[in-house]
Image (tube, rainbow, N blue to C red):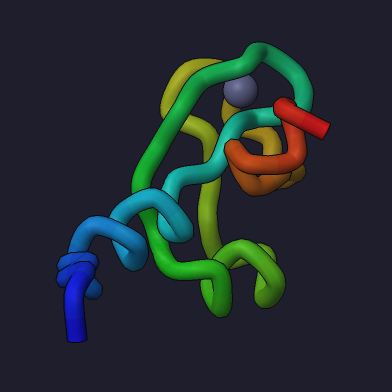
Length: 56
Ligand SMILES: [Zn+2]
């Protein structure tokens, strides 16, 4: 009961994706990325990776 992590912050971080082609960041739902319903604003392709994967 000591630490209080805001769930909204975790969710926000999870919902940020990076375009595999140009590196443009955008916030969306992972469901939409998997369903390929998200289009990169800069280059127009549909391949994204979670921003967290970059750290790995
Ligand atoms: Zn792009």
